Image (cartoon, rainbow, N blue to C red; front, side, top):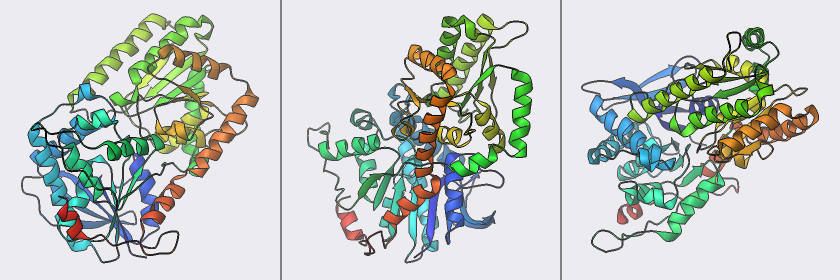
Length: 472
């Protein structure tokens, strides 16, 4: 078996991994020969066109720097002001600047050129997420014939939303350069298939665009997970126990409702606070009996839409506090900073309700982590958005429409009142699902399909670079 090369926008740093992608891939790469490649996180005036390699906690990592202008166009611009809102069906929040696409492709070209000298004949390349959709195209243009896979960690857009994205046909043709495309959920595979079946709209001149050929690209759902056994251990670790004791002193007999999210408009945080407000308004008996803790560290706070989400959430939290707080009781706590995994695992275990209600999400690993951290003898209840990819896996959660805050408020009431035997039955099935879709099984199943000798033992076909050039 050849080496594994993982390619993503950001490379892992030293210390605990903060994001779902880093947590998911570190273990996989640590067990295989290969390296991780991506942006260094540094912005410089004159970056080198050669990658710099170093060992970071047992993983070989290759990095390149970017200029400030290139990074802005590629990351804040096309990736996060166009692709992110469009893929999350928030076209109203998309900002379109024509030159961003040029920067987006230029950075993908720079990545490919810097990686090329380090690719060996039998290497398998695994590319991650929406920042790097054109990456396989750029490698193919450089003559790379290796197996290249792509995994999308966010939802795939509906057909109408896809057509609203500038250069959408070029982006879909870029996806056809991959040997395997992995999605989080079956709904994403269906959305992708809808494009493949109904492409393409006419151009302004009335001439139909040339169809994209996906005949050499395999598409499937590979739901990502966490490590439920590891979170079960973390939840009773000394650091977790310390956090639990602190919270127990503060809560007394109150039941804890917990939300843990990046501060992002896709997470449905204003709607969540509104649902909690309705819970308290409609159930006076729950006041002083329940407390909402929302952990929401800022993300991409240089982008206007994220600042607006933060301001909206601040105002809503203030409204709830002003309406329901008493001199000796606060209905909620809102924390804008990140916590380490052991502390989070302790909070998950303590929480009577895990409130995971994104408006649209690829998977949502918080749901997995919450399930893995529960006390089997006295588990909490997962209240989960129907629009998270996790809803396809966790059928025994209380599934809600996060846009319907009355429904979410009622689900919270049911969760708080749920008897122990039902909580146990639901949690046992949720834990079985979390184990079946653990991060180890996710990586194994994806790489088994991508590697040259797949599950049937037959060599996978080699990409014909001339074919790719002929449809460009």
